[in-house]
Image (cartoon, rainbow over all chains, first blue to last red; front, top):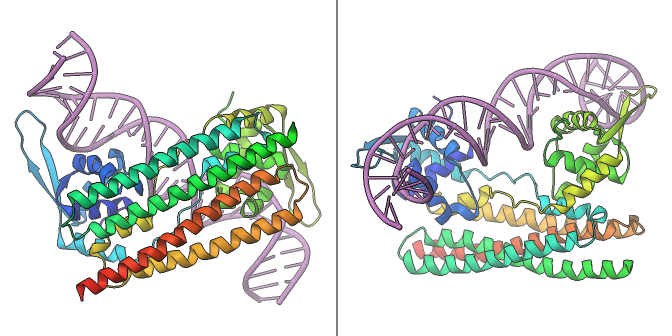
Length: 187
Length: 187
DNA sequence: GGGTGCATGTAATGGGTTACATGATTCT
DNA sequence: AGAATCATGTAACCCATTACATGCACCC
């Protein structure tokens, strides 16, 4: 059996489990679905769908359209559903840390005046906005997808994002106070 | 001038700014310093140091030792210090989201009985432990590095980890309640 | 005429982990 | 005897983004 790739393939299995889609559709759907916890680019999606077809996890149906290019619509096979289920039951591995902002702050003693404060302020603004977006997403989901059996799970992941961003904002506020204190100590 | 790589080189500049070190030392130091927000492997470190030497950001001095292999100790040049400062002043780009656990939970409706609960429980246990480790690190740093001018910055990054992990634990507790509610709804 | 959207895909490039290779010493 | 530590480095491999290439239709 052909290799089916890593997590990319699993994300595709999951999205196709919602309903059959083209590679293009998948990419478009990501920001409205798993966008807050996952990302995939066309350069990953198309090759992965090809491999998954070869491995029998999905089947392709080409739909001809007038004016627009053909669509290759993929749907899960039973093998695909099984693979998804099997993957779900395996514990997730924890991600390798790569947080550039914190790396800069760690070496913040060598930064020019005001640089650290600016970074933390921008981070805080972004996280505050994220909190708003999560709240809006939650409202939207509860209204538009109220009868979808997957809704509770979607809300859990959105909720995680909100918790995390709220914590980030709280940290940023404390840190700005501390940064000011440090500057005063110098003056 | 030769290419100096991306963020890996910058992390190395930062660590070498603490004091001159070998590539091996750098790798050993990571868990005790930037380990909670960054990671590098030997396969990245050694080639990066080579390139940085060629670019004039660091200089190498070989120390001979009896019994043990030679050490190549690198120290920053003025160009290296300038490069570090320049990098610090550029805003960090936000990381692409890749959170496998949340991806699994997003598709949790397709998981076998109890799987989601198990994942969230394990996640919570890991984050609870992380909170303890952050607290211990903070105490240790305040005691051992009390007079280091970089200490306040180190504490900020540790503090971020604590905030984040605390938020994760809080989310996990709420989510476990919700998962139980879902199971009851089925029964 | 020129941008945008639909839709597919490949290739070049860069980032990063793991495994391998070497070789002496010290600890169990 | 065997494993771990010190110390360096390379090579194979996987993962991921970006840019490129194609081509029609619709709108301004």
